[in-house]
Image (cartoon, rainbow, N blue to C red; front, side):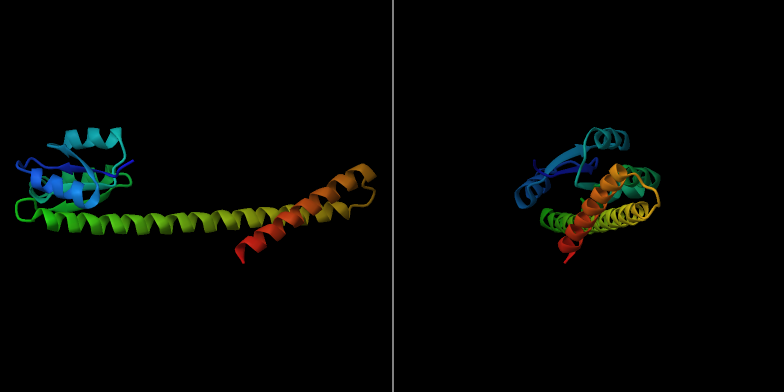
Length: 166
């Protein structure tokens, strides 16, 4: 699946820019000539980049703010299509894609670390509670056996989690 970009602009003669984005970055670029068209496109699919023509942003900053809020995971990039060369636009988009990739990697690492902590806390609590259950006076032998199995399983899982972290 190739990366997609949404470009909101009313400008014409964009073929060189679109070709540059396709050739240099492998981006499939969809055009939206209005805020309404851009919002419809954003609701239909996920984009890696949201390119906003600076002329349209300056004409209606509130529309731009709304689009930025609705962009989802797309990195917003404001470009001056009237003054910027296709190569410069491609460089700006490439930089935005690199930032997006870095942010996604950081988010994944943070989520994995949070999940790791949650799992370790749950295993520790399970191990502690099952060890406490084993110390209860008058625990039926069958129940003691089952709780001892839970202690062994929890201890084994804790060991695997510690080994995986090292």
